[in-house]
Each structure stands twice: as C-alpha cells, then as structure tokens.
Length: 445
Image (cartoon, rainbow, N blue to C red; front, side, top):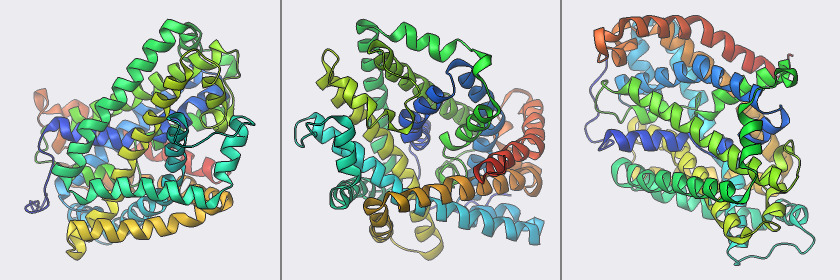
C-alpha cells in the first residue's frame, strides 16, 4: 500500500494545476518541432492515424502507470518505486534501481542538451523582435551561424536554464503550478491566434487534408515504428516526470481522468501546431517533408515572405519557447525531487546546484553538434525506452493490485472492466511495443 509521506513536500493546489503542469511536461519541442516534420516525412494522414493508435496502446497505459506509481508512492522516483515494489523482493529492488537511475539520468542528460535547442528558439525570438539580427544570406545561414557559434549557443542555453531553475526553485504550488497556469493557456492562445491567421490567409484547407486524409500507400514499416516511438516520447514517458508530478497529487480519485486530459491536450496541441506549420508551408508552395530543419530553417524563410510575417514569427517562436520551458521545468523537477526527498536538501539549493551541474553538462552540446547528437541518441534510443519498458513491467507485474488499480476505483462500478483492460495492456501489449521502440532505436530493424 502507499506510504502517506507527503507532508512538507508541497503539492498541486488544484486538479487543473496538475493537469496543466503535466500537459506542460508532455507538450514540448516534440510537439511543435518534431511531430510536424516527421509527419511531413512520412506522408501525413496515414502516419497521424497510426500515431493516434500508438498513443492509445503505449502512451496512455504508461502515462497512467507513471502517475499512479508516483501518487501511491508519494515521493521521488526511487522512493516511490521502492515503496510499491517492496513485496516483490529482488525483482522489486532491481526494478527500483533500474527505473530510478534511468529516470533521473534521463532528466539530467536530456535537459542539458534540450536547453541548448530551446536556447536556439529564444535566439529566434530575439531576431523576430529585432534585438538580434538575422543573416542577410537567409534563414539557412542564420541557423548555421547560430549552431556553429558555441559562445552564442552557450549564452542562450544559460538564459533558458535560468528560466527553468527560477520556476523550480519557487516550489510546486508557487513555482511550477503557478507558471504552468500562465504558460499553458498562453501557449493555447498563441496557437489559436496562429490558426485564425492561417485560416484567413490560406493554406489551412490543404494542411487539414494532408494531416487528416489518410493515404495508406505512403505508409511504410519505418513510418509505423516512427509513430510508435513518437507516441512514447511525446508524453514525457520513461524519464520519471509524470511519476514525479504524480507524487504531488493528494488523491487517487482523478488519476484516470487526468491522464486522459493530458494525453488529449498533448495530441490536440501537436495536431494544431501541424496545421499551422503545414498551412504556411502549403500557402508558399514549399515542401512538407523538410526534415529537422523545418522549424529553424524552412519556416523563418517562409515567415519573411508571408503577409504579417514579422508578427507571425514572433508568435511562433514564443510558442516554441513556452513549450520548451514547460517541459524543461518537469525535467529539472525529476532531479530536484530526488535531492529534496532522498538527501534532505532545501528545494532552492537543490534547484540551483543541480541546475548549474546540468548547465555545465550542456556546454559541450552548445559547442559541438556531434556531442549534442550523441546525448540525444543515448537518451532517446537507449535510456528512455529501457526505462519505459521497466516501468511497464513493474506496473503490470510487481505492484500489488490495490496500488495498481487505485485510480480506477473512483469510476462507476469500481472501474473493474477498465482496470482489467489496462492490466492486460500494460502486462503484454505495451512492453512488446516499447521493446520494438528500443530495438528500432538501436538499429535492429
């Protein structure tokens, strides 16, 4: 059974505060940057349909698993796992150390290079508002000059990390919840304004057709595996963020509802971002399959050519920064929670000290794209899928039934049928699919 040891840790003041913070963790560069470009690369509607199916079979079962482990354990990743798997003996101890090390390590490593990429977005905001200058040679030259300038990348990396540390140091209610109650509505308002803009200026119809009309002739095995992997990564799974946020919940009652709300918000925002981006692309007769350079190279060039492009550019890159900021907050919180719960550090000290260490680890990524790519591969190909696999196996096989199904009991009829369906999925389907993500990441296919 869960250990009620939340006193003094703080917590979310409202259910909405938790949902917005958890959605903020899920909504990040993956939604605004990666989802549109991989959708473009893999042909649009058919890829989106497979992606939605993968959210249902991988994303949502694991999202509930992380939230309920955090909620019932009530502390950092290590202590929550240890509390709920103690009765499993050696397998429980091995799962605790495996999940703990991979989650905390992933949060630490990912934020180090994620902050560099987010810093690039901050730089593009500064260009859009006229503080910095773009290269007269165009958007490709502008991005090349930024990514190739270690000192400039390090500066924006520092700015972004300061934003993240400032929020986490202020606490759960006064820092994270308060910030996300501003950041997430702001993000959604900006997206809505951009949707209204592209609806008025053209390209929205073509974007909707591209995203929502499946053409299965364009669907390949590689596209299915990419959709599976992105469904896993987009919800911030395998890195302990949802487990950590779940530990600040005060009740099991709304875990099922909240994880559904988070998954829906994350997916809707990704699709809305895709509509905006592809509307701009199609209105200018550009190529939707532009790859990773879509956001930092293709779009800035297009913004310079569309009506009102200056304001659109400001709105879009502020959107990108807000999404990255909310995710960065959750990544740091995974590490800070360990310092506070396990080692008894003061929150402010933990946020500053650990933030500085993560900042220092990010400097090589600021100066070397090769190091950034190495850190990205290490975490997304190996650490996150392995952590997700261990969480699925732990939730399905090592937790006591009372803990495992606690979130379903508030549903009509005790949620018995949903609990049984989730248990079957997390025990059998989800581990197999996450294993496919891991094998694909290491190049087995």
